[in-house]
Length: 391
Image (tube, rainbow, N blue to C red; front, side, top):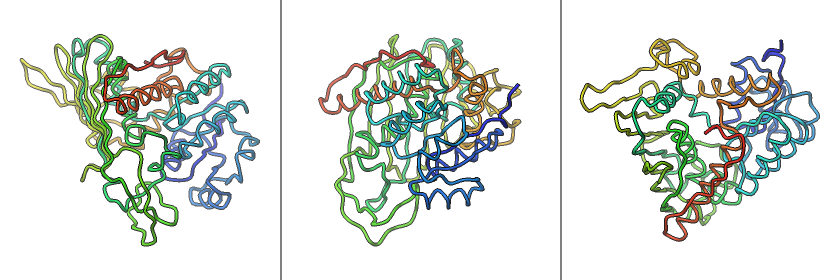
């Protein structure tokens, strides 16, 4: 019987999130054979820094290596072309979101992955906070009654100043949607996962409060606090803030606000799901607490504890109660599910992780957001979700 230690993986991307992938893979016992960076020099330096055996010169060298899985954490415009080649080489794929730059590309990747029979995952890791797994089972099992209202936000402040810069600000590298594509997609995926409901139509407003930013002459790491002195003014064509009204299948309603310039909010994804009998609420900056609201008896505050959660929550927990689990732990829980399927050689009938089909669903939601913002009207979401969605 094969074990995770028998599997070798490679990671494309040597920045913040690529490092998180490497560390999570080590935690679950998967060997990281090498890293591909934006240059051969950077790959070598990152491999040395992380204690990885190899820094690949290019994608050809990576694909020729004896690895079974490739993790794609490169800038968004590289996702689709890299994933195409990885699948063609017969290797399983874990891809950061967004899956592609357009829904046409993501639809193609779903088809290629389905035909290949290979494991395909999109890195919607926030599903794997144990209390979100618990909440999903609770809501879907009728624990709060019929879902009526889904509200929330995803707020960050790392792009608050006009001197803040990242490649995601450039539409040709990050995509036509920035705040919605980068972090709003996490909220939309998570709340659909928790409720089991898809968005049928939406009304979106997109705002760019900083229309001109000062781009540094040199490279900048994600979430860097350094201020460059040598800059050039660049017009910005992607949104800083989005407000979106939502209509779900079955009649539920929702609203979400997404912002990358909310002072003091470092990484606050919050949601509340109100049902006909009870409500649940969670925030990523206090991830060990799930609020459960009632009308006729005291409200509850469930602290993450495997002894008190349902089986779905227990399966995602890696530590006993009182031992805090955070952002990095969600990657280990997600990859545990992914690599169970890798060891089986194919995706399970109903994967516990987000698949390429789920990544494509987020691209279709993005299309509707762009169209609604352009027209100022309610816009239907073109679902036609391909086989393999976990919703």
